[in-house]
Length: 328
Image 1 (cartoon, rainbow, N blue to C red):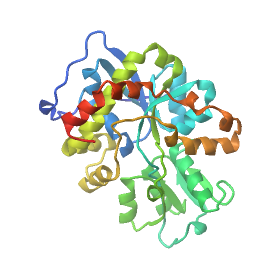
Image 2: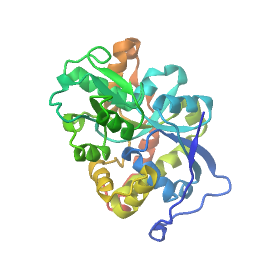
Image 3: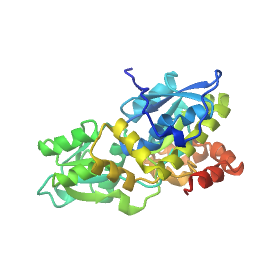
Image 4: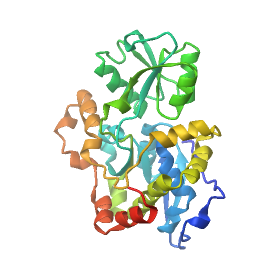
């Protein structure tokens, strides 16, 4: 499996951030992420500000395109923690994956079509990343809401990242594309038509969960509590220091356009209390259950471990971070 390690370091405004170097006994944790989109911003910020080291972990970020491939990396032991969608956890019970935190509060996907298309009913081909991805899941859900049958009324085309999806529409190889901010800005600049906007539906959902194998969590719970501490502080740093966040976004998204970065910063809000509660993966349970009814009979508690975030809230850690960074 091809891995692209992101080990670069920015000369960041660290003079304003107090951090400790990781001790010699720091735990090594490989974390997989799956797309160069802004939802991953807190992970990148946490890495660049050396907050993982502050809390005693040595974290390497590994880019693997596609949530299914990321889950396979956890299963094989090539990675220890993944940041990907809950439907992958729900649809692969044999991997014994568990969600212990989250990024995001609502579904944020949009369907943009090429010029001239005014209704979703005119769309016959929608560009997504890969089958099993968040884009795939969101496309199927939104199309079904409009009374359309994915794979029957509308073909879903696997074309890769969001730039490729926009290119597919522009070249007439697709009628529409599944997009999230900040690529929505590029779509608007190209004159593409917004047909469906999940962000306006206020659907509780998190496309990115902190995921590990249950056996790994049981064996390294203390290290994953520290991982979660670092991520919570990373969220607070992202919220409180826009310029730092923008530099990190620019680096990982490979974007220099200030307007694009502003779009990303404006669109996303991340929770300081990242409970992976059922409400944030109820929709995937229902969708996966349409193909596998056994899922609907499962106790949803099997998919999550709320205890790590609960411990940090009960200890006062989250309130302390909130007060220190003056964010909520």
